[in-house]
Length: 173
Image 1 (cartoon, helix red, strand yellow):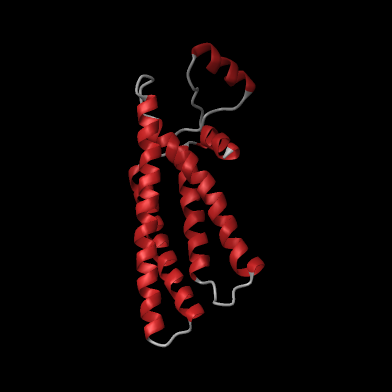
Image 2: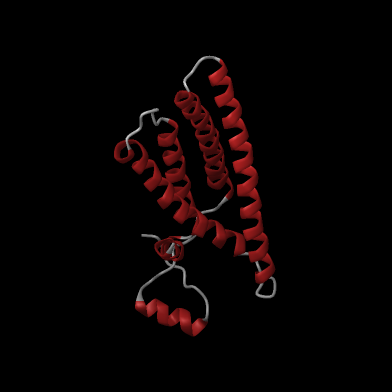
């Protein structure tokens, strides 16, 4: 999260959000392809690393975007709404995906698959749906969010920023 904050400041929230969503989508795609007899290092660890990096980039950028329009007086309320929405949305999303996964697993068991194959098939469905939703979020981010100018990190510009009290925009070259 610390690195994500620095990347947010340097390149903007959109430029951090998009790679985060791509990383999450790739991680879910790898999980969706994990075999029944998956090996940790080759089948699971790469997906978990992609999800971890993607989540770190995504959540920091999302919070920045959500809070960007809040006034100082409303920042506490806005922060509370964003955090509540994340918690409720995550719980609701997990409930829906778990229900779909369990139903699919039950159907696979009824058709004669082994318990391990049925559970893996149910998880594959949940990861595929989750990945599709992340790709949809990526498309929305690309269409709706405008690129932001880079913010300088040069010490001379930092001094000017402190003097003026606001960010100084520079070209992204």
